[in-house]
Length: 65
Image (cartoon, rainbow, N blue to C red):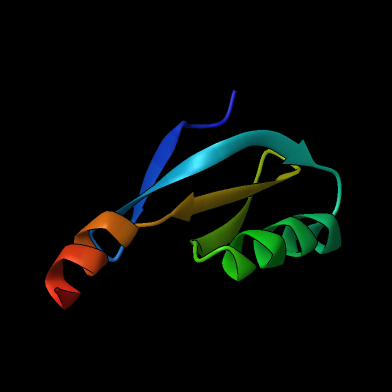
């Protein structure tokens, strides 16, 4: 079972709950999340391609006010 959360550069990313068979499928999913303002990472684990994402929009909006 994939990890629910991983850390990259001291930032927490959450797994989207889906395992993709190919890296291309995972990258396509990650790109759709990126369009919605998420920061994404794709990793391969045990032959599965997993998409992890994070978004801190509330914190960024508060800083911009």
